[in-house]
Length: 159
Image (cartoon, rainbow, N blue to C red):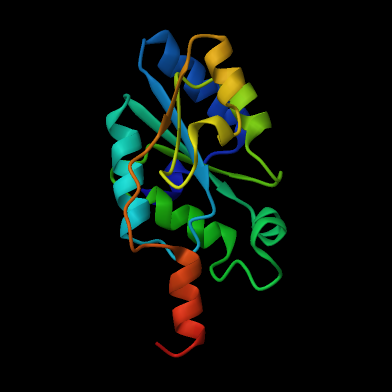
């Protein structure tokens, strides 16, 4: 069930440790995922293909407001987490309240850190940390024409 994939950090740390003990490559990514769209799906499928387990951290409502402004999110955090968890390619989801996922990345020490193709590899939060222990950092392929912000702007304009 979808809700079984949504975990708090303490539980997720234990799960990730068990995955690593079984030599399963753990992939980590994060995002707001406000208005889930095809670009998100393709990016998460690509991230999933890089390892055995995909962990997705979803920005809390408060952290998304800090990043995107007072009119966001459109979809509340628990619903966004459930939507992401419903995807077959996603193994685990957690919600984080910080402006960046660095604390989560440090706690989980994923084998592979992935961000969407709209990020330059050098700008990916946690890059230096993950590479410091031999982990890999990947900027996923960018799917043109899909953006939550542009979808929301179009809706507001009545398009």
